[in-house]
Length: 318
Image (cartoon, rainbow, N blue to C red; front, side, top):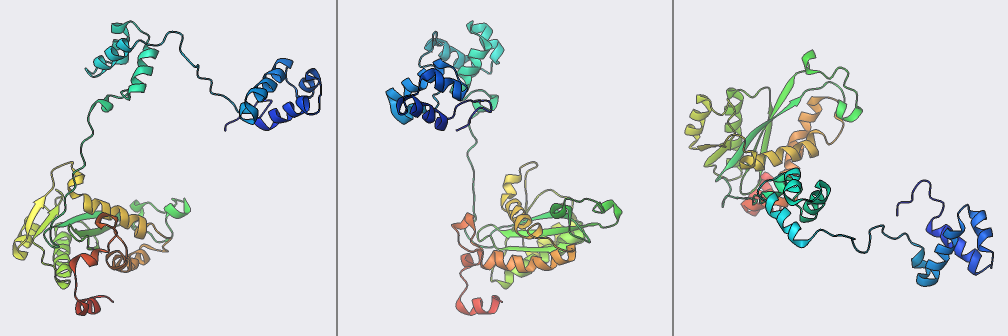
């Protein structure tokens, strides 16, 4: 319970006040003087204790039991109807003849205070391919290189500016739509040469697990729109799908994987340099694919979804 900083009495001191009057028999005026309150206050708390016991010493709500002139139901219905026609509070107040404060109170009670409350929530659309390899999502995350523990740990940005020659590195990631098996490499840029090299490496990685990739989904980055990437997809027998502009949910599995990687790998500990961070990536990826329960697949591990036999498990799990 929140107590006002200048409050003379708390429930504990109210109980002491009542005890002095009813148990010790002290005069109410003497108790009021000793505790720095008025005689009226003493009588109030004694009466509340007499009526309700210890519960009567707890603060009551200041809300009135009933309103003197409550807003008529017909007016409230009219306010709701006008709001659903996108009228502002001031317009509604002028039309209905009530105060803007009353309109605001009614709208808050109806949950219509904000214009966006009038729009029905867009249903969550989730999709998942039937088999591993039917679709892999590919994306890139740009990370700053560093030569000492970064500002995210120390809070000191001195010398961390990448305009001073430290530079950037680009984490290329891919994740299988059905199994959530992920593959990632750190490359020096996000140009078409790096993108095509990563696509070949990802394709080979999934093949090593017995997964044949047939489709790849990317955003509309220039490296993915290049002829080189197109030709690589054709050579590997892949159908290339690009997301619509400004719709990150379409490629949401890659976006979610990047966020997980940042939280559990890139920013999970204080790496001395970015090279140490890069060395940790394969270790974390192995844990992600083989040992980490994935919430999106009912807490299974991604590798369990491709149903490897015992021989393959022994061969692949290092």
